[in-house]
Structures are given as structure tokens and as C-alpha cells.
Length: 122
Image (cartoon, rainbow, N blue to C red; front, side):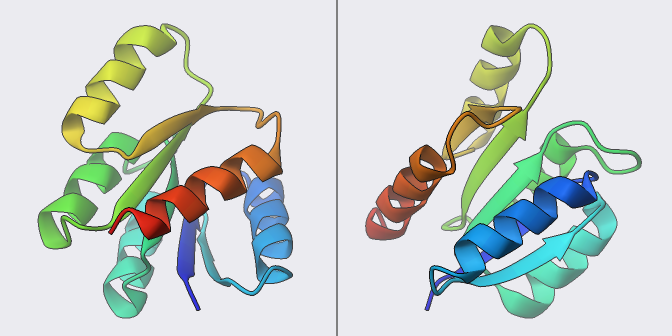
């Protein structure tokens, strides 16, 4: 069973991810800020991390950097509502993000497809 960690300061968003993927057999862990997300990551070692870019405290790009330093094979999917997506997206992909999704998500099915693809891409 694949483990997914979602780190987002919007509790409603982490709840949606938990419900959707939990019902589909994934083991889902949620955190509402970067520091606690890293603690959960270190304890659970999920294969997939969904990381919000803009959060109070530790920003998503810092969380991404930490996770990939510790476990380079982890597939990190960035979720961003930031303006200037082109530059931000390019920077995140350059840092090692697997892919980026815009917020609000238009489709959980598209996200699920990307997660499946990431899991198969070992």
C-alpha cells in the first residue's frame, strides 16, 4: 500500500486529500505546516509527498529540499497557487519536484493519475 503525505496549511485541502486517497486504499498522512510535515516524513517515509508552496513558517520549497536531501527517490508533487507560475514551476522542477499542480485543483482524478505514474516510475 502506497503512503502519501500531504503538507498544506489549509486543513480543508488536507482533509479532501485524506478522504479521497484514503478511500482508494492509500495510507494518507497529513500535516498543516512544514516542520510537522518533515517530522511525519522522517517517521513514515512515504513514497509520495504533496507539498503546498506557500505556508507559514517553513515554505514548501524548503520542505522539498529537505525531503530530497534525505530521500532522493521520493516523488514530490508541488501544489501552488502562486502568481508567476512559469518561473516558480521551473524552479521547483529544477530542484527535483516530480511535477506541479495549480491550486485550486481542477481534478483529483488528474492528481491520482500523476501519483500512479510517479509510483510506477521508481
